[in-house]
Length: 190
Image (cartoon, rainbow, N blue to C red):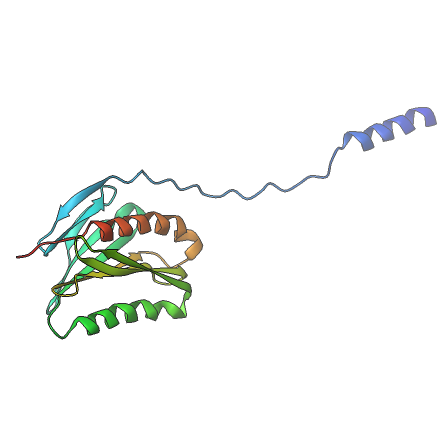
């Protein structure tokens, strides 16, 4: 009996194999279409390129000397808000300060704020792109100006609670659109 039981017990011990391992967590893979840009002529004194993936460009509410348009991305639950102001002889400093202060308001929730100067001397477009890391309300902000007549500021907002890990892929995709928007600005003289 011993001869039979010992081999059977040995078989069970050898047949069990390795300890079970938990399955790794699955991650959502987000893929966005390759950007195709087309020129947008607005009622404001500038044109720019927008991604065809965005649904629309709509006129925003205006107040005083501020006029705006919105570039909407419904499938990403995001909008790039653009605000245009005319530069006069003594308001450029305050416009620049306001644009910079708007970005600094995000420091409470941001892990980091990096900035990249932008300069296109051929088309007289100069500005700054701010990239906000962390759970801030806006992940990207920018401004461009010709320093004499035109000032445009923009902000990217998502219609979701700011969770950097969740919106990171969409934020990175839209940062490319913002960079293209800045690079393609052409001022129109009326």
